[in-house]
Image (cartoon, rainbow, N blue to C red; front, top):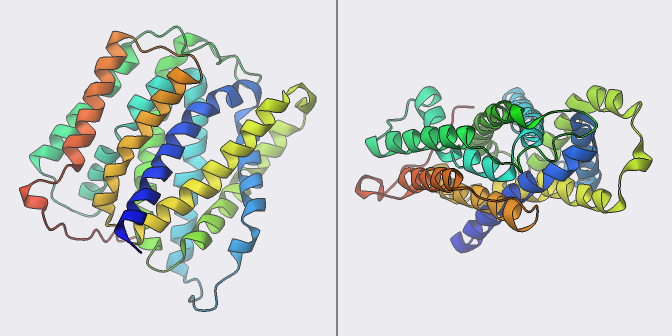
Length: 315
């Protein structure tokens, strides 16, 4: 694949992730989180039924690949969705964007812990920037953070923003595992089949909780516009972003692909401000700048990275 096309796939994937992170806020105000996650996987699965079939030239699933698919779904789909949805229900989309800016630093730490890769002082500096950015946004007071938090499933108050931020940090860690495991999967499976299989696992994992949440829920009380937003969210989260990311990752090394994570917090904050009517206070602007500086610091090639070695996760 042409590298420019691969770059476009990675950039569009991260932009869509940031958009649906922000746009999920009105959804969690109207739907229980477990029901929302269940509907998301169900709609995504219906859209990818044809992708489940094994291509003629593809090898049968090995036990290792099957385990990787489960972990990819459990961490990158199931836990990420729950942490992200509960998190944005307690805090603002802008705060979510700043916290998500720490994904490249989290990937670097995962590489150090599990791949035994050397981390340069420049990357440690990026990790420090991410920590400072998260700390600042957690301390900042934003009146828009809790307006949508009183959905039917939570009854949460704005003073739970710290818990929402903590859950979003959990989502960042899940996303880091997702990136590391995904690189290995692209070597044995097509992007379409990876997308369909991990979504199927996600649907299976959340079905008991989704049925429990749906049992007494009043579906008639949900506005038609929110159902349309749910369809966009489901297709973006389960189909488009996964396929685009895995497609780009087949051509671009994982360490280079991490550059495009910068588009996630930018798009999340942009949607929060322009669509959801949130505001950026000075502390959040500073936190956002520090977090983005960390992203640039972690991903900008230096002299020692002119010929980066491909990342080969052991998963």
